[in-house]
Length: 284
Ligand code: HH2
Image (cartoon, rainbow, N blue to C red; front, side, top):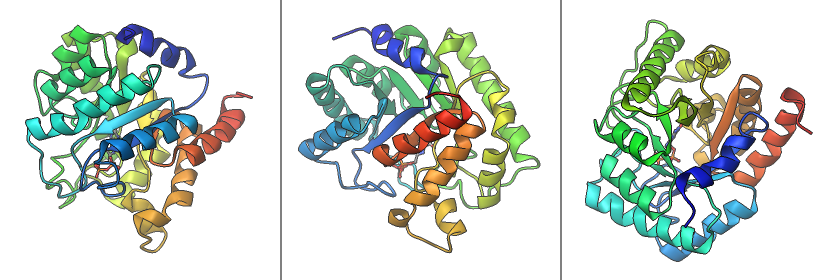
């Protein structure tokens, strides 16, 4: 198996030249869109193969839903869901770049040993104090996301004085803690956490003012895929009717400074961001 540094190299070279597409693969029974579809290893492997063929730069493997109100998953169960899957994808597709969507340092550690090279932590490494040490020691890339509260309660009454300033300051603090733990600056990505303790207006404001978050100097990862604010804008459309709305957010997120997009629909997203890249990055 290649080293984490080798697996990250291609990604780092492409970053900024074109938008990276991270395909979502949830081995959960309860995720808001793909829950229950990929809990069997065969189905998950077929999905991984499809997303890679569709042009995914990264596959983001999750074993715990973080949708509003989701029940936390015990560590052993989360490991059971993600570690064998990461091993299997790595064995079948040795060049695939895998990320683990977890807030638990021991799950991250095992996932990295199994073949992942990115830790995607929706808590910004605040739920588990060991997470940044694991990132620093392993040399993994780490995506640090903003969340207000915790998934179980975050949508009850999200409140900010100035959502962009508060998210920016929290993300700056996350990056600072990562640097202090020994994570090199080039290994840090930041994410405003669309839908994580935010109203529809908060999400729109964060996207619109993305350049202010980009000004922190780190690549920005954005996860709008099929989220409820899109359904809300479109008069209450359910998740499986939110693809076109998602593509609109991707194009604008690229224009406003996003470098990595986390999506369920890789083929459509790759096409959308290639066109956005041609327009915004002069990347033909
Ligand atoms: N959104 C979800 C999960 N992980 N990670 C980052 N960095 N950014 C995001 O916006 C983000 C994320 C939620 O989406 P999904 O995985 O499809 O749903 P669920 O949490 O129900 O599994």
